[in-house]
Image (cartoon, rainbow, N blue to C red; front, side, top):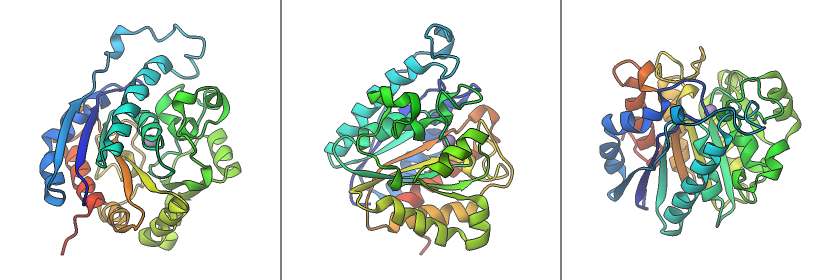
Length: 302
Ligand SMILES: [Mn+2]
């Protein structure tokens, strides 16, 4: 990694259905993030956590859209400020490393990363995160960030939620294993590239990730790389809000992120999300997040 890294913590759980993920940035730092980053990149600046109002002090029922997209006004506020911070890091030729928080933080990361460049997106996740207020079964915005960035359905009227110029052809989702029915249909009907965990079973992690990276990089100046820790099997990553059996293994995850680091198209922004220390075992999931960040930044065994 030849650019400085700027760590931006976003202690939010507005997009999630369970509390605890707002403590993710603390848990990841405690697990040794700065050391992990400095092993690969000499220049690492931790900008601290942005201020986020506690969910308990807000009223979930105040806007008409809220049952279809809970805490949307709070998500908009967090996303706008995060987008500014991410864009500022990119302008300074640094790599913003965003610590969630739930996956709704990706709305702000992508909006910021796309402000002055054409980006592609690689999404490592058990879930599609492709719901909209029209299709969501839960109303939780952490199931919607990709749809938001692409301006689907209601998000077409919300410029703040969109990643400017992001074409669905440059979005690749890797390792899906649980989709809501309408979300699955939307992914089928969209030009996004999507690989399920079965594709990884059939073809191996390296072949799938290389294909995903090449789809996302086509015509892109940089990549946004989003890692939801629920992508991994819960045996490896128990501390996540929505664990799903049968995820990728420890080695598969490292192999995938090593491929990201080896890409010619640079990583423009990186985020690790959904670490929930309340549900974790001895901070194992946060430690894993640190290791995987190091791989994504170019750490190799030999
Ligand atoms: Mn996710």
